[in-house]
Length: 344
Ligand code: CP3
Image 1 (cartoon, helix red, strand yellow):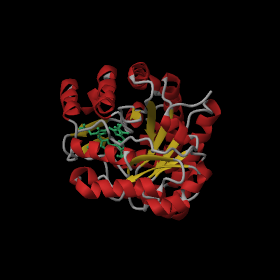
Image 2 (cartoon, helix red, strand yellow):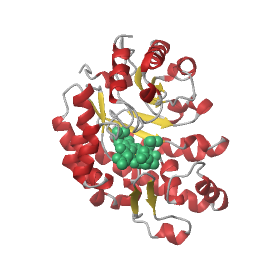
Image 3 (tube, protein in one colour):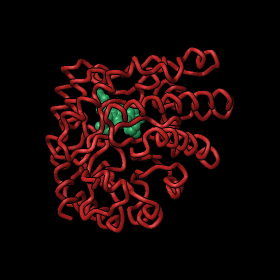
């Protein structure tokens, strides 16, 4: 049957006259309606686990802007929480987790197939969204990639250089590999259930892949991603997968082929022209407008947007930012970006 949704057409390798658009963190604090619903839920985690309200904030940017895709509202740290880690968010600072530093800490985690009770509200959010989204809007489910999630599980918080995770992988590679393996298995469980509930596309966020060099990049970014994708493809061959090894630089080249991903999302450290030459020949690419333009706006936003659309117009492209939109962005600049893409 002919595929109608634009995001699915791009992911299947089709070059479209106007690239479909969505934004990382499109449901977020830059929107007053998001802040109001989060206040109603109480706090961020309560919002994630409240299926009705999580569906509501997912729909807000679709209603306001008519994006071509919506991304399930949740967080990459819900999986470690379902695996038994304590998780809480400190307002204005970010996530905090109980840490994993010893074999005993690891042994206290629960098995990968035990995550579903805790994550059931997330699957319910997906089911609500499939009922309520406009028929032309694609629903993206997601998880963190194992390396990125492990950096939080080991350090117990976000870190500028992922130092604690690097230290553990270097000092106790066997323990670190067990963490990665549990995350690979848990992620396969989690994403399979998202797909069964109705997610049409999956995205894997490896936000800290850029701090892995050489063989470490292969072992901890590429290999776990490949294992997750091949397991998902076995069960759900028709669900496209977007990989986002943020900061991969030269390692973006060949990443889709090596992992089986249908699309590689690129950050703003590489130019769209370079991506067109080196990454897009292998298939669909997504990105790569610098998020800062959503704060500063104006002619620079419009010209950069047009430049990216033009540079990537020779192949399949999904327009997005290079990373998430920030709370200080202006909702008007989002509209300016969309108008620039659709009139480019
Ligand atoms: O993109 C979307 O709109 C979907 C929802 C989504 C969130 N987080 C909601 C969120 C997605 C896909 C994520 C992914 C995520 N979460 C990543 C990978 C992508 C990236 O940004 O690199 C990471 C590393 C996390 C972990 C996380 N969650 C951190 C470090 C923080 C605090 C930093 C910050 O921006 O405040 C969060 C909180 C978070 N996740 C918020 C949202 C909307 C803000 C919380 C709030 O509303 O108070």
